[in-house]
Image 1 (spheres, helix red, strand yellow):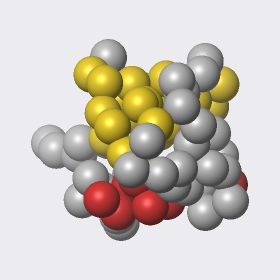
Image 2: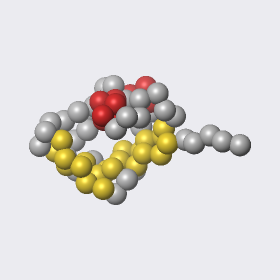
Image 3: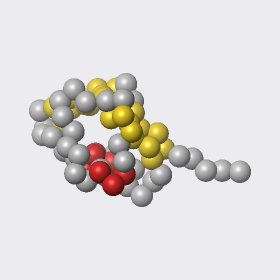
Image 4: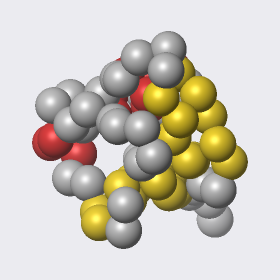
Length: 67
């Protein structure tokens, strides 16, 4: 089991997962998001290959359009 902080809230997962899998689980697939992992911006091209680890700190921002 791993614990990951997402926007300051701890979440637990049974096993390590990729950033892409986390985004899918959170219902954010297809949305315009920016993701910072442990203080560094994670490029969208790396979401499928970057595995989250116990203690990771993520900040996820969803772009909202409007007028």
